[in-house]
Length: 203
Image (tube, rainbow, N blue to C red; front, side, top):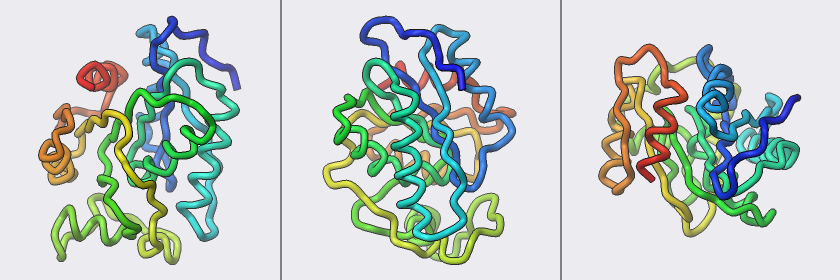
């Protein structure tokens, strides 16, 4: 895998984390679009893991993928979909590796919560007890009900929320209530590199 060219001194390094169950069609184009706008950006290539514990395996895979990238400067972690609730532990792994964090970007994602809630718990809390998962698709056995590992004292860096899927509007509203900047692109065909950079500028 070819690595991006060096970033300007002190500029954050954008590392993209796709949903563990698969990236949408527009996701792979983002790193190149970000680099075309002068950012250091790369996707963390985490192999799919069909076996439990799903979250712990994905977090460990993300840590290894980020280490392989060896990003310069402070990390700006951007997570889509099901990767969003895993950001606290992914960030904790980077702190343990002595990589400074510039912030976190959540893209059409459930929000992390304190404790060890499951994905089903997060949906109930953020969409209501009877709410179905937006864009629900079949998931592996136990995927939705396993407790998610969490890190204490999160967020430990600024957080922003990018909304493009109107079904995730309740999560964007919760992010705003937490005082996080929200970039509303609901109804756009897909999030773009410009959207991510615009949100990063608000942190």
